[in-house]
Amino acid sequence: MATTLIAEIHQAQTRLPFLSRAERGSLIVRILRELKMLRREVLGNVPADRCVWIDKLIASVSSTVSEIVTMPDAEFNRVLNEFEKLMATLHNISHPQKPSKTVH
Image (cartoon, rainbow, N blue to C red; front, side, top):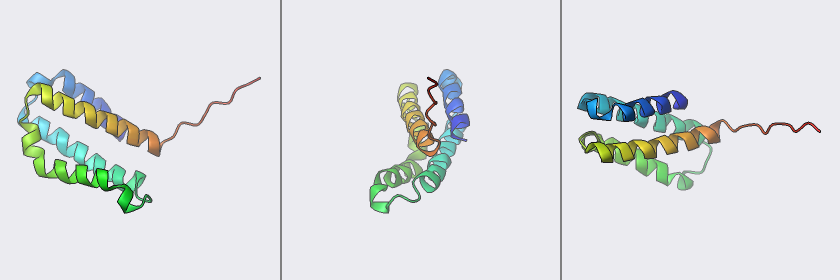
């Protein structure tokens, strides 16, 4: 799901000037849902004191969705960039690449 959401983030970035507040809000809510899911699935076995950063991020985003949605395009784009990087990192942690075998 993270890869689909990352693709949607890219698409939103290209259409940014044309996105309505409702579309922006929907995207942020989907990102928030994905963060919660990744927190549970990827970091579920990590001690809680080592996950404070993502718990704070989720709480912060949850409480400021309306402010994020009304950001100017450039700021909203930066937010999307950061979410994209975080999603990609968490996705890579949850789906590690197997090293390819070298044939000699």
